[in-house]
Image 1 (spheres, rainbow, N blue to C red):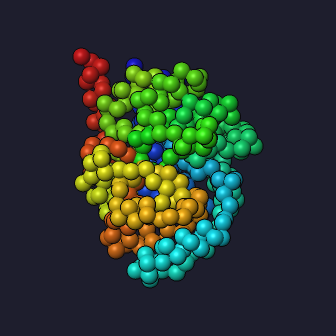
Image 2: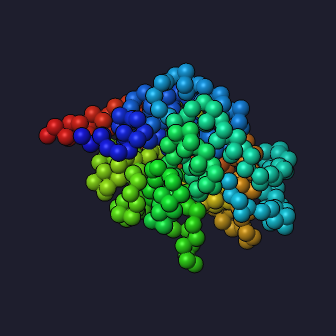
Image 3: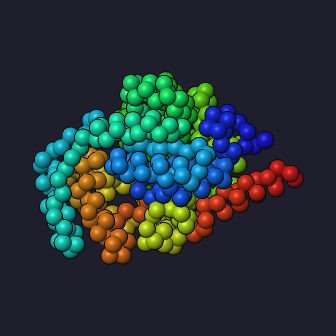
Length: 356
């Protein structure tokens, strides 16, 4: 059976379909729906306060008794505040803040405490699965979660990153191809090259050949064709973001959904201007204007905090050109639909093909 493998058995799910932990865009309804339909729903907790995470976990548990996960951002231990960089960026952002009547934000780069509190919350409520992006947690965190039988999912954009995930004790690794929407999960500097941008079809079989843990394909996968292709490449499942981002249950605002639904594959770009970390989204006025900036973009999470209020205000005023619109490279395949319908259709079509 196409849906019976090490991945589905390890996660306790019926189908090898994982809803990506889209920080800021998941809802308890989306997570529970995906899990109830046999996939793995994921709470995108990257930007959550600890109280918000607790309420979301409780809400999902009230809606579903099936396995679900929480996705966390691994803190950037190397992030430092460069006052000159921040001052220069604030000067550049002044016109945007002035247009929206905003004050300069206070920068805070210490995310370690919030991360540790989130880990404790996962343990407290016996969340069965925890996934990570932006790196690998420290050994003590991994040991702590494993002592409470939490299944761990890591992210890799190269073979080397996948190997490091396995060495660290991560149970499953997501092979994030360059087509994926949202933030890149890259965390290793490979030689003197720029951040790697290996496509999903190339990345998946190479990672499969170099690790023994289950591999999940991610990047540009929107329907059963992407799932079947991924399985043929050696992956044991897929992680889908943009396909669920435009669903009815998604927490993404309608401005973002509508922009994706009207976009095409050539409209996306990888940029660090919104958050200080490379992410794929729809190209717009803010990206183009920021590309003219002559200074260095502050690292994540500093730049993310400097632009957050601008992006929020833009959404509130319907200005899609001045906020981030994260999207993978297959927006033409996006639909406004129920998450349950997406999963049911994928499963039905694969089963029909299997019976031919």
